[in-house]
Amino acid sequence: MSTVVRIPTILRTYTGGAAEVPGEGATLREVLAKLDADYPGIGARILDESGKIRRFVNVYVGDEDVRFADGLDTATPTGSQISVIPAVAGG
Image (tube, rainbow, N blue to C red; front, side, top):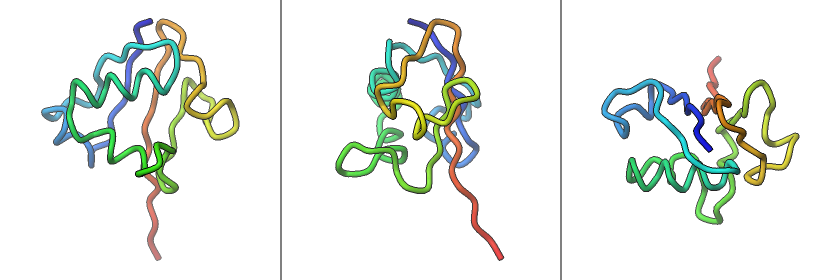
C-alpha cells in the first residue's frame, strides 16, 4: 500500500531535506519500519526503545491521531497521508 509520509523540519536531515517521502505498508508499524530502512536513524526519533511512539511525537493517519485509533496497528490505506508532528513546548 502506497502512502505519503510528511516529515517535520527537524527530521528532514534524515530524508535529505525532503518534506514528504513515500511510505509502504498496510499498517503504521509497517510504514515506519520501511521508513527507517530507507532513511536509517529516523525510526529512533519517532519510536522509543520499547518500540512505542515517543511521548512527545504525534502521528496522524489522515486526520486521525493514531493514539486514539489502533496505535502502530492503525491501517494505512493506499493514498493516505501520514503526518509526524513533534510536540513543541515553550513559555
